[in-house]
Length: 424
Ligand code: IMP
Image (tube, rainbow, N blue to C red; front, side):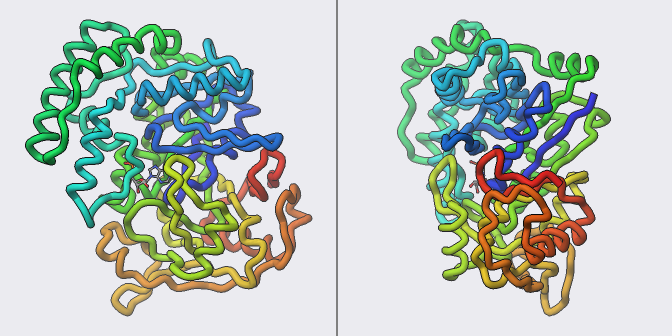
């Protein structure tokens, strides 16, 4: 009854979509456990590219069931758009996609409050994706949230929406000086979701635990990355959920003892979108080159991603928290043209070296990275499918990373397509 968890080990955008799609072939159920439509999981095959924001990346394998767990915050408009896109592509969704009745909803007022709050914070803004994620989780924990199950009862939904929106309107107007929402229009729009969403709603915890009892394999798909975790990330420049391994248990209702594999997805360099400290960031031509070669623009917002060298101090920290059993190293091909490649192996803080990742951002903002330099491999490795076909320099780079972290690399990605992969 094993659960494999796939987790971003950096600041998100590590290429989880491709890896989940790849390993879904041997899996019975793929389940998303946190986040919302702030995620953008890109999948490429046969010259087609698809971006999924909410539906798990296993949906393109007909034999696989997909679950959106209780820990996810769901925008009903976004989920229905995605379901329709998948149907239009010719894939079945009914009977394959299951949405937790306990998942919380993102409503238009969450986006409005987020927009107003980000504007109000001004220079201290988080740089969110604007999808209403933070305010939806605030309502969840303030116990004023609206859940998927509420969509199925129009009277309950009306009452809850009215109460919530009266409060939000007071906040929008009186705190942020923003425009009020049209309460009736929103209620009338959202009561219509009952029939649309009903075929997908179920007790997903029961579904997952029964499947595990029957010996089925479950793949838990994390969104964002460990350094954006609300507890373990670079707070406050984080998302409002738990991308780290604990989020899998609370976001799906599966026991920790059912997890037997934790795959850390590591991009061969670092990127970050939004604000917050990023010790190995490259603010020069080298950073621009990585951005262009790696296509480092947000899959959800289109924002250019900040780029930098691989940070093994940060990775050792996220590996420690998550207990990675394997690494999947992505985008190694992007480094093909570089003459030399740097890797951060320590930080200098107030004149002393440390290999500990500081857990307060004021220190992290001040650290100076200490680098080891590796020679580039001077040849394009895009599409290589075997370790033996990798140049020695590329193999050395992988070995150094894996030895430093004490975790074996079981997958190396050499391009965006499914087949551009080395299974080690
Ligand atoms: P939020 O999740 O929209 O609240 O944004 C909070 C922070 O997380 C911002 O810095 C976002 O850019 C970042 N973020 C959210 N989702 C993703 C993602 O899927 N990939 C990378 N960064 C993300």
